Length: 171
Image (cartoon, rainbow, N blue to C red):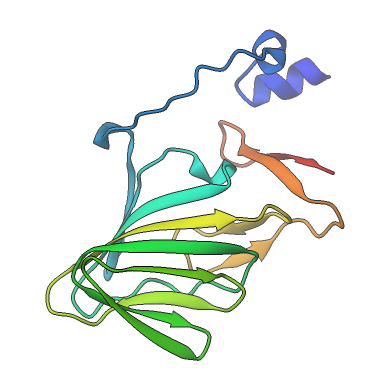
């Protein structure tokens, strides 16, 4: 029943159909989630931003480090270099940016960032995501699988509290 599905998602009928939302507007470091790898650290500065049209992160690249290569997808990305120097690898082209500069591109080609300077590089990076099919990526970011392949767009993607059940709406 619907009540059982909502219970698995950690909610109830009243809250699910309620139009009153206490939307959080301001976020502090206590709200951040961090993913630390050998070459980089990602600070997810807006919790659960994957469900939004914008996904901002604070990316710190170690000297000589690089972020994983993202496969081409619908959307656009913007970044502002807070510290250091980076190369933006977009398809076969490489673009250089340093502290105080910004970048903006369509995400239709494979892409990644690398630190080409001395010391760390820190970037405020925002992906503007065009919602469509659902993909999942492993926690070590080495494997990405497409979950849906439909003519409509999927939206409101959420994991249940067990982090094994995926729920979404489709056009």
